[in-house]
Length: 147
Image 1 (cartoon, helix red, strand yellow):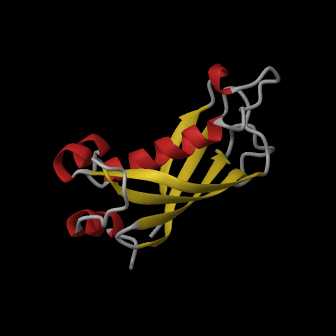
Image 2: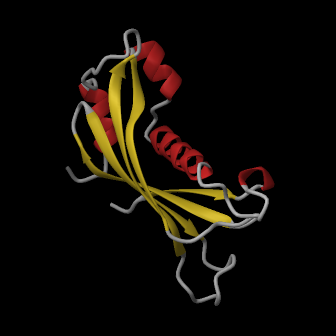
């Protein structure tokens, strides 16, 4: 299955004095894309807390910054599952400059700006301890992944 895609434009507030996206803001883009990926599966995080008593928390992040994003560019943030079980999900994510928005030619492919591996764990919302994902939630998360 193709990766989930979420699009965003770089706002002035995302950049440093040089007009380049501040490195920590890539984490915001990645988080928002994962949230929209869940929403596309019918999973709202506030409902998971209230109805299931679970939350998802980032356990680790590995980022590789390849090229800078700049003010007013259109970005594409991809979300895909590398592996998952009922305790954790390992995501691969990419932030790309969309073709035709600062790319050298109209025919050039999207340009990879940042690559990330993000491990998210399932926690009990009441005590913040590891907890197995309820099976219906796990099935929905894995929908279309082929596992």
